[in-house]
Amino acid sequence: MYNKKVSIPGIDTNNLKTLTTEEMNELFKSYQNGNKQAKDKLVEGNLKLVLSILKRFKTTEENINDMFQIGCIGLIKAIDNFDLSLNVCFSTYAVFLIKGEILRAFRDATPIRVSRGTKDIAYKILSYKEKYYNTYGHEPTNTEIASKLGIDEYFISYALTSLKEPISIYQPIYNDGGDTIYLLDQIASEKEEYDKETLIALRKALNNLKERERLIIYNRYIIGKTQTELSQELNISQAQVSRIEKTALENIKRLVK
Image 1 (cartoon, rainbow, N blue to C red):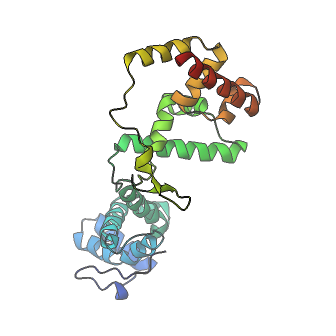
Image 2: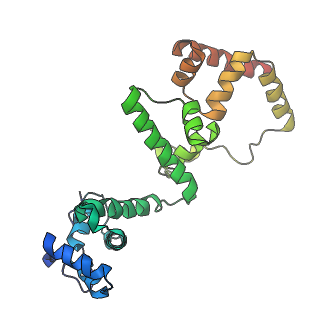
Image 3: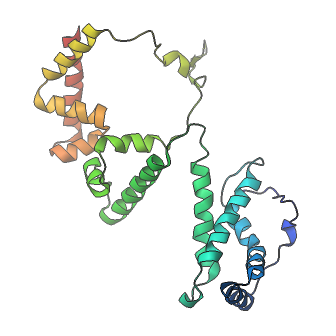
């Protein structure tokens, strides 16, 4: 949890004012009748709410002030769109908009730029999987997700990968007391490209596989399905899927040589 002081120029965050329900209602009525000063008072009177939400996130000293400003954008949106006639507490309504702005900022702050559309789809996938699991007690298959969200199965794996944090190529992955092996050591060189003959042999090998072997290889390594998902779709055990996959890979190696 965040425990550092937020320092905002011109604002004493230790002595932020709060508004009573009656004061909030009067200010909202005044603002919605055209009084712009009332909006300023509503913002000032709810800055403590932004801080309370911000404390739920793990932030660094360098970006905490930026996150506070972003949270204030959510607060302003909440003030602009709040409807007094719904008899809902303003803080209950505002929390979702403030939190949403902060979450979007965190999602967009990755070192590798990924399109907003891809990330949005990834979060829709996660949301659907969670709702599905809560309803049926198990995760949906990629086929079910693709059908529900209207996307290609291959894109599911790609979208979810976009949410993963990048790691350094100098990250150690093995050390037995001797020389450390880094991720960089396991990355193929650009010079190690497959020649045309190898690619032709690989294509022939795939075509010579049995239909079920080819189906499993395609779904495992192109679509990105798990062995459990395939066992459910093919109505066979996970162990059978594993054996077929292993056999298929051995056949490919044998045919490519």
